[in-house]
Image: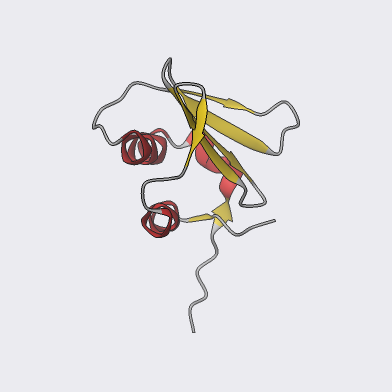
Length: 93
């Protein structure tokens, strides 16, 4: 039985290494510069730069914007695995 306790998703905003890996994955580029900020309602956070924005909410809702339009994540299953590999719970609500 797996008893690993995953951290709340919103706390990933303080994990620079995890944010870098996630942002590289969604932008499909390595070493992209980015900033992070919490959403106004405090329930999520954004990883963004001038071109892209990834917003993750603690309830698992996620959206990705590029060039002013919403886009699907490149590989949603790999995205979830990537977040979990850093010890965060993407399903926590």
